[in-house]
Length: 483
Image 1 (cartoon, one colour):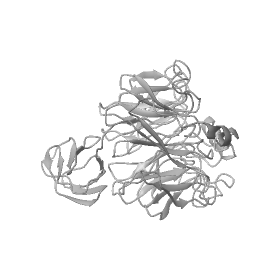
Image 2 (tube, rainbow, N blue to C red):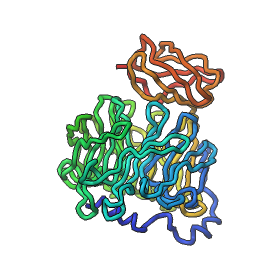
Image 3 (cartoon, helix red, strand yellow):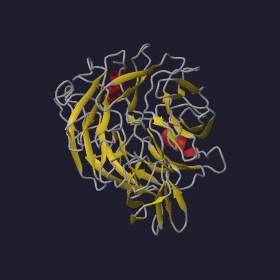
Image 4 (tube, one colour):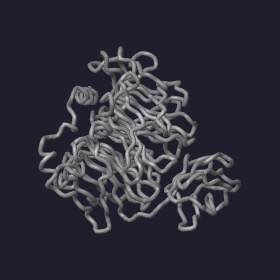
């Protein structure tokens, strides 16, 4: 019950938004730190103040078709139950939804943009039916558009129907058009909350529990899933497995689960984050504890379950990486640590597939503190992320980090048959003159400066999508797969 007890106690009032008074005094005397390289530019874009949200948690930001970034805060807002917001790249924030507990509370996970580009899908850890878990609620699954119109798709009922409780990971849209996710618990209550589940849900709210964890196959899947290029889904559990220190697992859309790896402490302990599949086909992730120094690791694992520990954190380079990695357009991976660094308030790092780590930024307080969430690379090239605490009020921040990477395009979805519709996200797409799939020309319509609509052309094969504009030639960040 370790995972649920931690989350339950947090909801009872233990919050990193409640930082000591020195954040309001000493922090004013400190200048925001510069990035470690002269070519890196770190900028605090938003300071949360409770009214506009507070304490963003596990969630990472996601880019919409309008070019803005969308995210969640676990608390704050009009009912102090969390918010959904959108933010321009320069930092103008608009709260588009305030949770009111009965419609959900504490959206700790980030959003996922559906492949149709029209809706974002997400979860709340608590709220909904307050008869579940003694008035706290077992959580919800929802969809929301960019204007802030929210629809609750499912209210979870623990051991009832629909089953599962306390979703803390982001959803992922499968190639079948359904959404897949995890819950931290499986029954109605903290004291006997079960070990968690994997579920799928249709776009209209029909939920099916695919797997219930029972210990040896894992416990407490705090993170969401990703779908591999083989069509199977991959995830992690914080605890359980052969040694009790967490697992990596594979599961099919039909619910057949295979435990790929059990952590044993020295190779990592308590993986809290989702995996990322890299261009080399391998999966990369983090453990929040364990490793050579007990402070967390970065690892690589194959689809067959062969794990390699790439890096063990030592404190000055960061501690406790809760967040997932993101592979940048340069092929390297980028991530955050909850604590550690020069001021013990967290770091941003870069790591190669061979395990060479570089600290890009050390947080000092006024620029943010305590990072649970990961980074997103916007199509203009820079990275964006959030901190759980710090900033001008101690309620967290949104920041950006530019390291000199150029613009690119991103496709929704990342795979499709000939003739299927594809949305291309980008920056400064107005006046585009050409779209190609692995060199094959496609018909297209420029919807806006940040969106192109196209279809997979006859003759296309798996490879890069390239958009030619008057000012640049933009290549997709991942290869588009044509079955």
